[in-house]
Length: 136
Image 1: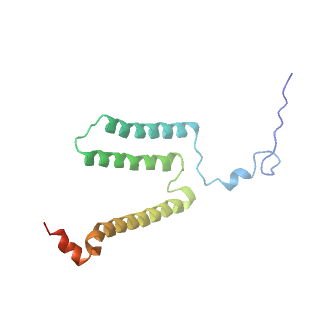
Image 2: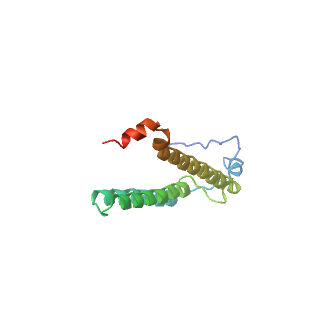
Image 3: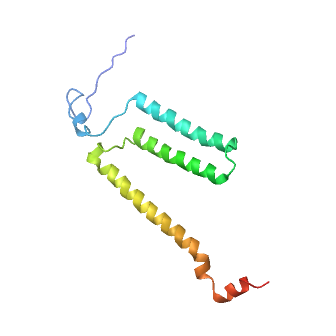
């Protein structure tokens, strides 16, 4: 018994290799090694914070939080490069510019929200409550 595999043309091309590659010529394609590199880096960048927390490596929780946040930022960059294929060459740099614009908006929104919430307790408290706060 022999299996007969018939090549079917994709995207309407006659030879199966034609025009459909030209449409996404600007999009980067990754290899198996590229995906495996990204996967290994992602696993390592997940295991390190887990080990830091479980091993109680730092005495101060603020130091632990800072290190975990820094590793999270590194992991975001790894995902963007290896899995989302973002670079300055992709789409002429427009996808990277859109990402920067999005990050600026997120930083403005988060910092403004935190600032408002920080000052909300004092600014919204009625004067009678402020006097009661000082009573024994």
